[in-house]
Length: 128
Image (cartoon, rainbow, N blue to C red; front, side, top):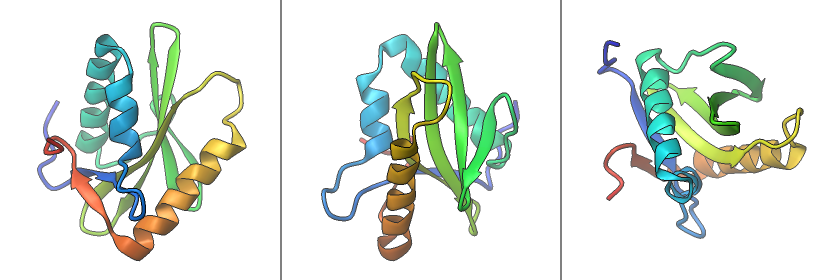
C-alpha cells in the first residue's frame, strides 16, 4: 500500500460541545476492532477518499460511508472529501440493521453543516 502524502484525514470536532464523535467512537470499541478501523482509514486515505463497494458507498449530500466489517461487527464511518485534499470523518456507529438508520444519516448531515460554518478539525493521528 502506498501512502498518499497529498491527502490528510481529519476528525470533525463539534463547535458547541467540543466533542469529537468519530474519535470517541473508535476509543470505545474493543482494541482489536480499533486496529481494523485504523487500517481501513489508512486505506481510505491511500485511495484519496474514493472507495466503492464493498469498502465504501455514497450516502447523500456529498457524504460517503466507510464500511468496516470485522468479527460480525459492521462499523460505519461517514466522511466527506473536500478541496485541499482533506478527508473529514464526521460520524461513526455500529450498524445493526440491514438499512442505514435515518437518524445516523441526519447526525452526519448536522455535523457536516456545523463543519461548514466552523471548520473545527483535529488531524488524524495527532489527536493526543
